[in-house]
Image (cartoon, rainbow, N blue to C red; front, side, top):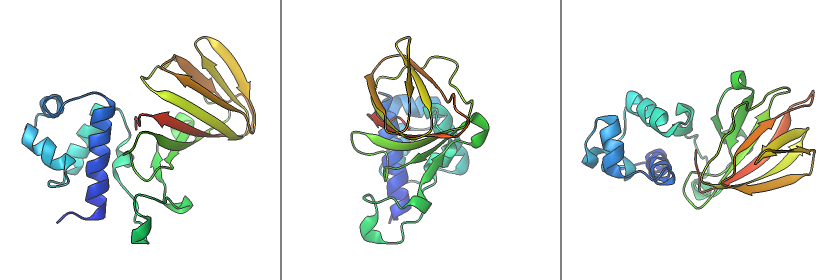
Length: 187
């Protein structure tokens, strides 16, 4: 019988595969595993090993920490509420960006992430995803370039774009905190 952590893991792996438009067969080929095994992982019937999780993380381009959920002390909150001290961290301060998943899981049509950009941190190379994205600057200064146009945002400002190339930077002396919404989920 699968526990709540296995259900979250299975749901997250399925959501990541679908967000990237990959089939079970493509995932199996890339991981060197059978289609049946991948299907069982996505249904929570098989639990991947740590090395399997590393392979999934590399394949999907996400940090392995994404796959480790935190205990939800109140069962009725599972899949509904994420408490401040129990968020899943996605990244390290070494990159200048630390993100926390605010959504309970990667299921659904969007994900919500709390992004903390260190002073001077920047995304030097343009990124582009097949997503609709929006953000709200909770604190600090935040510059975002969308389709070659830079926008300086401060506390209380927000933005939205869809499928366009973007870059970001924190020009300030304090961390910038941005609540970021991405549809469909990509983490």
